[in-house]
Image 1 (cartoon, rainbow, N blue to C red):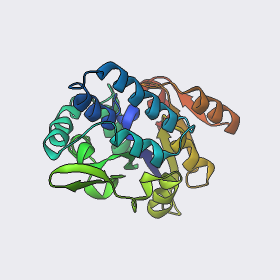
Image 2: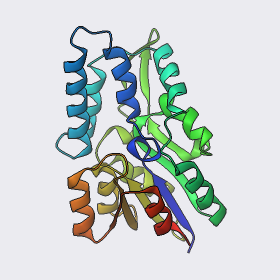
Image 3: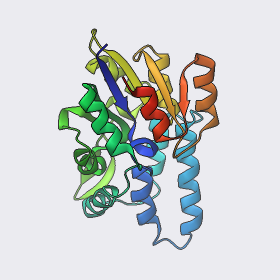
Image 4: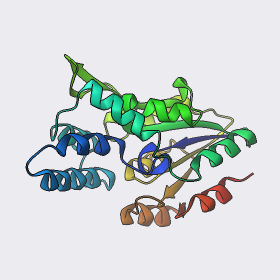
Length: 224
């Protein structure tokens, strides 16, 4: 059966968290850079494990440091070197099999579009949050974007899914499992290669879904 496969981006297609990478660069200039980076990681993890609402996590992270268009562009270029090993080949294999691929991310389009373009995703296949700028400075996020809130991935999948296709969502966070749990995907595959989140593993096991710890294992699951 034809498939639509939705990939999370941060800590799945990429081996980093893109927003955190940008913010860490900005935080490096602070006197208490180490402490600020720890707060950043704690907030990120709280959002990824469901202990903090996604929008609260995104807004709290954006308040930690100042970003501007130049830094966003510089980090976007750096992210092109941070693809999870083996992932580019897997995406080529899936497209050769006839699968329809989408990138669905709680990250930000301005950071992610260059690397996702490298990985073969067209504009219509990239779904991500949007920065709001004022005078070249990032001042927040677009609150109207579904991916800025919990349940947003389900909204996106419901919009792009096809009745004749099996929909699969792959990712490391609870927002990915949440989309499956809400009925927007037929299958969930937890991705524990980059970040291992026990709550996601437990959720996958509880639901009888898969959880992988290598790209090879993911490729085997998706082979047709």
